[in-house]
Length: 370
Image (cartoon, rainbow, N blue to C red; front, side, top):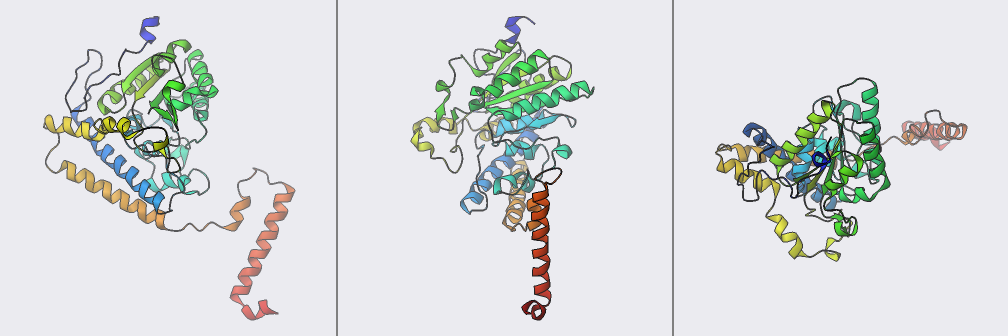
């Protein structure tokens, strides 16, 4: 492959601008209107889930929530371009992508409220557990893709990360391995401007994060991360190239983190409202709605129905989250080791005996009193 084929464009690809106007591109076609209508419906749900999660944090029902408000187009596109047999490897901020892939919203939030394990079955949905350590999921994604290749499976892996993850050694190792072994992996970097409080300018001097791809011998692509149409075009192309044996692609989606890093972060300490304000006008949800309306593709009642559906999902999520979990004490020992140590067996037996005694006391208070 010639070096020019690996380099991204000078500016992010945009098919729909912030005013909802079309911008035709010689290489990338506008996705079909019905695809974008479905994408809009998913964006409405994604925004409602983000808002509901913020409320649940304030109510003390979630321990933490890294919002993807303003980045929902990246989340939805990542799920929409994958086939049923493909796998998604998300970060801690990609709950919306996990749900868009088919995971029940409550199961996607179990981890964030502090329950054990990831809350959903990765094999059922082909979604790896959400990863909090930066970039570790990229290595897992590459290893998974390599194993799938060795088994002869038709599997493409889409691995998500943020701009902060590109400063980690795991990022380098994952991209280098994927390129050397020509693996079917698409790396999606959501460049939202900050790694917590560290701006991109303090992480890299490269023209763009997408330019890093040429150093590994893989394609780099630069796209407007608030334009669902452009994301579907670029990511869809990368997935198909990977499936056809074309190897990995590094996609940088330029977006912005509207909310704080998490509910534990005060973003006003490192950025001003003047910086945030212009990005509000680039909202991916409003942009796509403007385009659909201008094209006559959003029928009367479609918008209201999309919001009504989102409200129903949010209500079901609230009900499920509000129900207090009832963990069994013996679960403390169930998943520590595949083969319990003698000490753990002893402790588990001691706890089981105490629980039996407590149950007996409740059923026969007089006997317990003796």
